[in-house]
Length: 440
Ligand SMILES: Cc1cc2nc3c(=O)[nH]c(=O)nc-3n(C[C@H](O)[C@H](O)[C@H](O)COP(=O)(O)OP(=O)(O)OC[C@H]3O[C@@H](n4cnc5c(N)ncnc54)[C@H](O)[C@@H]3O)c2cc1C
Image (cartoon, rainbow, N blue to C red; front, side, top):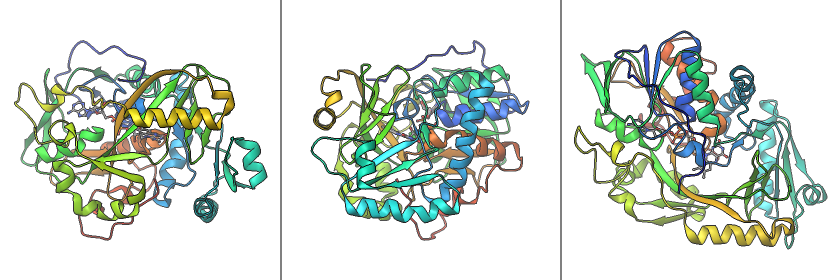
């Protein structure tokens, strides 16, 4: 079931040309559209389903620097600043609040990892505090577990997945961008190695610049044009409650992760619990992902399902020019795993007596698109001039979204990049260099 979301209207006419065409209306595509349109460029945002329909409305809403890989911290710093600016400029409440995140654990290894990360925090001037056992217990009182310690990441926060991407896309439209939903991009028109247009199901848009922000579909789109992008997706389950007593804004424990939403309901999930489904694309890039599989072996469940045949990584492939995989699956909407839903509810009700009577409003599944080192790709694509990629957000792309969108816009417009783009180049994943798996 798709989670609730703010729907926005489409523009009626597909433009015959645009300075930039963006494929994918998630948080990355929407923010890139915003920052490009704000510079005065004409922008068409193309979305096969509706804006925000996949990962960008299905996540927990955490906007954090805490525990991030050092390669992502310049981007996350920019993103946290941009969340605030976007909210002020667009004039819509995107749910962004620097409410702080609270973590507690009874696992000495996990606590030691959080303590070790303080060195990184210091280098990037991040305001974070290790909590003693007593402080963690007072921050996150929980029945039946005795916390050894915790973290309070003071300046981190949350935003509202149901409204962020649609709200930012509307902000892009206010600067002149056009938005086309139920409009799949089938492929690129290429002349002499350079992009000259995007072929969509509603017609061709002439352009010399295309940003692929297609989330879990990005690798399949690139493959269509002979370009390699190692990407694999893991399946996750989450749920939303009805409005419930307030036990805190953003909470992590080894049992569960909770985010309080604007209406007083909670998004709930279990951190690290994910299922890796074997797919043809997964097998194609299996070697690149080996270091990650080894590092995360304990946390990952393996399986095989419909995704082997259907979907971005499946055998069924592209389909015909009239009906591509993108139209067959307008919204990638895997079911929530029932045993995970039961488990989340059981844990939350047991640990937090105030939530003993919570009711479920909706549950959903989702595929999180990952790169082999768990760092996004934001990069020009060697091989096709004018083609750019911003995908592989590896479970971090909501909070990082405005940073990723801004950097992608800088690259497309050939402006000074807001942060050094080098750590996000695609070439690092293709040139045979050692894969350093980042933090989740
Ligand atoms: C359960 C869960 C929890 C998460 N929690 C967090 C969190 O707390 N904090 C955080 O920072 N991140 C979190 N994430 C990750 C975050 O949601 C993603 O990294 C982020 O939303 C990715 O944004 P995106 O724009 O790249 O992709 P998406 O939101 O997936 O958007 C891609 C869009 O492209 C469209 N598309 C694809 N192909 C085509 C085509 N050919 N033509 C037209 N349109 C196309 C799709 O329909 C889709 O709407 C979580 C993810 C999940 C699933």
